[in-house]
Amino acid sequence: MFKKYHLAEDAKIKTSSIPGPKSIALLKKQEELESQNRSYPRGIPLAFGRAKGSVVEDVDGNQYIDFISGCGVFNLGHNNSYIIDGLKKSEGLITQAVDFPTEAKIVFMEKLSKMLPPSLRGNIRINFGGPTGSDAIEAALKLARIVKGRQGIMAFQGGYHGMTTGALSVTSRIAYRNGSIPLDGNVSFMPYCSPYRCPFAKNAQPCGEECIKYFQNCLENPHSGISKPAAILLEPVQGEGGTYIPTKGWLEKIVEIAHRNDVLVIFDEVQSGFFRTGKLFASEHTNALPDIVAMSKGIGGNGYPLSLILYKKELDVWAPGTHIGTFRGNQLAMAAGSLAMEFIQKFNVEDHVKEMSSLILERLMSIKKQFFNIGDVRGIGMMFGIEYVKNKETKEPFPEMARAVKKRCYENGLLIEIGGYYGNVLRFLPALIITPDLIANGLAIFEKANIQAS
Image 1 (cartoon, rainbow, N blue to C red):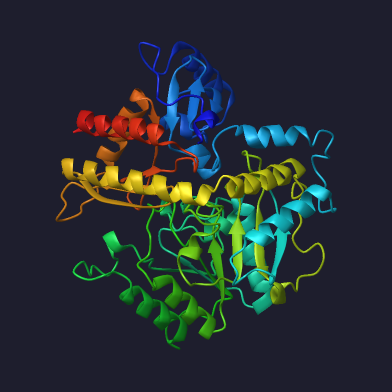
Image 2 (image 1 turned 90 degrees about the vertical axis):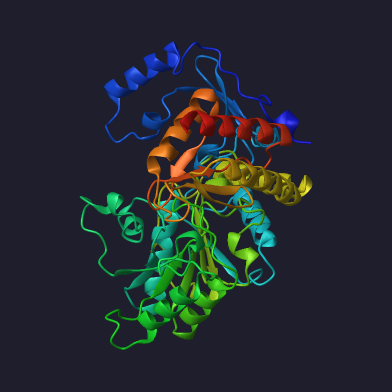
């Protein structure tokens, strides 16, 4: 059904080596002009030309199957024609409206509100911030502190929430934090439920209970050394941390303990939201209910920058202008987001994600059996993590192998990314509309890359 939304059904490498000559020329120009801060073209050295669906083409004409999707931005694929054609009807639409009302904005908010789970529908306010996920996190933290009159935040190990000062303060990766400007010191990090790498080393039983007890102790023990926070912040499914999916019931217990102690709950759904896991929110796979939800990435419909927070009406206590930003009124992003929601409902994308997710997991499990260095495979919806270890018994991380497989994938026409606590997890974020043929061809390249790297 979604074949027409993709540029091709397979990868095609035309140049004798990659990057090709045109990519090399642009990469060289980039090096002359752009800062040392650039990162992605160091690991995947190519220059993009065009893209459609789950296939991107570089300036040399090489075509790659895209399992990155703009870091989870292009949930409905690159340049989805349904969205592009719909936007043509919006010709003349004001592109930025700060926070003035427009028809495009009202339609977007109404559509999003109707898509909310029944437990939240009718009790939510929407606040638009700056254009990135970091901005949404900053707004969520500010609101929680205003509501509770407390400064502390509890975040979780393995969490990634952005690179602005506040967002980085609740991001756990030490390499990101080292050498940064002074960060917010009112943040405490709790262990996250990561079944394959239980922080309490309880490998013989399901992970989770020890994390819960520790979290509860930190909140309720008067000698924990941690003052009562305004909020806890966590990803219902960790993204950059390595696609860690908590055990059943863990999220609900964490939320229950927080609420029992008068602490707000913020879910970061920037990457895991907007149907990335097959539902609007990843938390909908549980019974856990947040007070505040941060969203960005996929909600812009076709890669247009947009972020927002949703929160319970009773928390709407901040004064006008408390959290502002020039680019919080991106009308093209709102119009594209409305079309994306329309597309998802019209073409029953939720069921498609469920079917394609099963196909991918089944194939990955088969590949895992072939290679001693693949310690774990996990996934939900269109979020997957493949963890590499030197030994399946000791689980010693093997980041070198992960990097080698990623490189081989790139050379053969598949774009993937690396994450994980130790940089040893290959991450797949395919478009929600990926086809069975693209899955088969992409995973064939992945299997070949493992053979080449072994």
